[in-house]
Length: 318
Image (cartoon, rainbow, N blue to C red):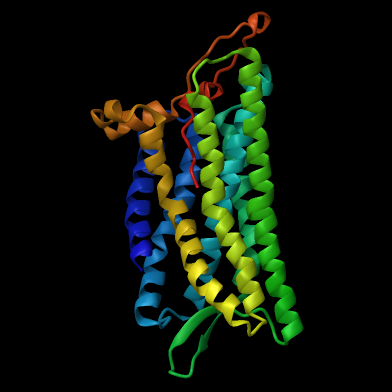
């Protein structure tokens, strides 16, 4: 409950500020489109936390079947959208480094908006199973609870349960994680080969992106498989591991929705300088795209994105 309360307050306020500045106070660019959609996904996820707080406080779901399904699909859709957007941002940066001329001619905010819309549609499709399985039940004490009903019969339940866990792991972690690592590896190799920077900060920031993504999501998927095993087993040790480890892994997963704005602030520019500026100036420094002219015949490249210099990368966090 403490973690959920913190996520609700920090996530709604932090992402709300990002949405306000990105949508109403800043020029629309490709980067702004990515960060705006990412902030919307995290904001919606954070805004649903009061339902879980009430649920945990009273050990009772008082909101009915409809809200049980709405809560389930919105949570999963925004989780998928957030992860997919992080992957798209990495791919976008990689393409900008590899094909700068094509990006100058075709990489536009309008195209980015269509890609973001596609991300939301794909996230919705991946969330449909949770909409179908979400139901409410009643325990022996007469309290209602919201849960995933995977069907009738042990074999059917196990098959559906396994399918959703494996699907979320493959498409919600494994593939995005591989793509993010691959993109940043290509970018760093290109920087080293072309001697674009002599600072060690770009490599530290890129490493932070990968590590933070892994730390927030890998434990959650590990204990999803543990929970899958305990659901059809009477092993006491597995049950204990699920209860203890599952709580910790869920806490890390919840923090995903509120950590990004703080990473923008602390890692986007020097903290002491940013602290003296307005919030708008902070986000502008983090998000604004610059023009870096590099001659291709002297180990340099031309690009319209400052994110080629990874020292200016806003870390997208967990």
